[in-house]
Length: 151
Length: 348
Image (cartoon, rainbow over the protein chains, first blue to last red):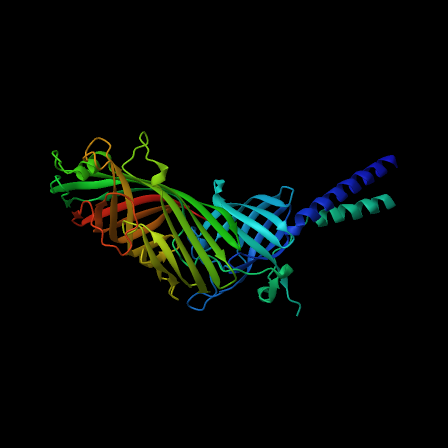
């Protein structure tokens, strides 16, 4: 009986801790618009890592009127993958203080993948910094949270 | 047994809380009907589609082929014609974004350019030719570029630079009092993602001496996304061909110039001219080819004609404006071909 209560206590503690950490890190979840307004990215969580995929493009079609594909990808076999649904943010881990690190961001405009950190400055604003090697050689893009209109 | 029911329930919620969201086929149309949360404002960006990438670090080398130079007389100093075998020198630049917000961008940078002269003649008599042959010219400076969007359409660009130009070396630096300050401010409109333009004014040394000029910014990408124009008139303009996102070609021109403090370092000049101002300005008409060679490293190759616009000497720094004050030495350089190549780390 004692063992069962001890297990129950441990599980409740672990569960509460996990839920607290999760709720803090999960504020990143949602749909965000890039600084240029050209794309909207939906951030999801897979296991304990965060990923973001393109869910909207200001100009969804190419000059031929067909849905845009990842034509600048350095890997030839991926150049026919549609941009809509493309995972451009990968492998972010929550590091506390509303900061997610160790991830990468892919820029479909030039086919480059950069190291990336995300910092939430308020509930509706992200500072997404893509950089090369060290953070100094980078650029910060400010993303805004998107509120879907109710139909 | 009830305890196991609890355990099972808690275990399930724990697992559920970290469960990964399965990738399902999504209706993306729902994401079009949306607005920025919290009433946030949208701002225009500083670029149009396919604009050439911003260079964070650039390490380059500039080389001009041979040409004839006619150096003018002054008092007892006779004129001299001499052959410059070549000009050469490093061109280094760094340009780092320090503030990068949706509503403000600030880049700061530094430049270091060398321009050494190699003459054919060993018996140079003209003081300016002697000085150039011995010390060359250097430019070192700091600069900033501010982009301030007001809304989705209107923006302001302010650029400023402070340069030390002269025949100094690192062991014999020249006074910071000789710093040349240039600036340009442009108020513009971003009509859409392929067009931005603006009007402004510049304080510039591109024509060799201080000048105040109206400027016109025009960046345009054609609907095909294969061609574009990048221009800040009258300083530079180029027609851009986008072969791919990682390969660009340009044809255009740039007006390059500055005013250099040329000091009388080893008595090339008479003692009455301890320092003079060389007004150098040249038009570079060129082809440029830029390609990403690995990820963020880009190679830039440039070749073209260097057309001499001004290479005169004033006794000191002053604003000539519309005045017709005579130059101390009036020189002319024949035109020459040049090449320039650089390795660049480009910005994300």
